Image (cartoon, rainbow, N blue to C red; front, side, top):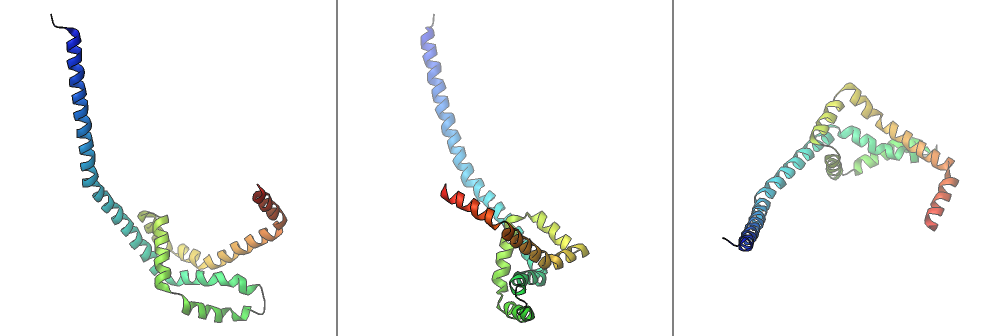
Length: 173
């Protein structure tokens, strides 16, 4: 009659050898997967990033003039605070327009858009901006920007004491 203890020992040895074989096989396959498929995944990610950047760049180039208008609008509020400066706005626009490095600006904006939007979203945004409503919205953007700035400044001034107290309390903690 076979000794059950010996069978148990043989089974355990076999199970451990099988387990070691399975672990080493799994490890080998994992390494193989890493080397074979990671570059493919990385290439897919790079292609996706590249497609998004191209879509973003296309959007930026197509809307160059309105983007420049939005950049120029950032100076309006400062100039409009002093009535004596208001007549200078066209001259300031002219100077700034000449100083804008469009290549750098468009690249940075394209990069930002490609990180914030998917390729499909960029396509949707481009399609929307080609509509009459999209064009109207973009042409209104400088005015909206001024409104946001003025509103933020007004609220900040109106509640400056509360904001200062909250900041001081935070800094003391």
